[in-house]
Image (tube, rainbow, N blue to C red):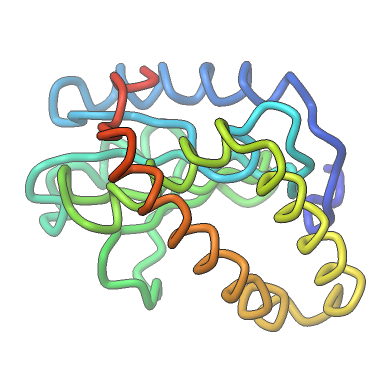
Length: 181
């Protein structure tokens, strides 16, 4: 398995990988999943990123993990109960499989919406997309062996982009588009 803790050049295959997994999620979850979206840097055409597919599944009553845990485990994802982010439930690939992060969030909730807004803003604003990628390269070089510092280091640019995205959303009347799957 390739080293996925690195920044890689954009790969158009990331969209195909998302679609393959997204369709499995749709099949397993059915209408329980209100939205299934490709999020994170691999969802932004042309953006260099860690080659890890991030998928956001939006549903009502996401807190009741027992409603969907078995369904996700049957298709190869493991519930990560130790997740410190209380706005989502988190699943990962079975060890030895390609790295995939599944974020289950409340439909219409702040964390669901901000994730979609951040993605959509970067898709439309190439300059900020490039700045963000350069910062990730810089941080990876500094903190290759310290993942938590890499993640923390992204905070300032992420919040700067979120502020710009918020203004953009107010100017344009942004609404999330239709679900990716």
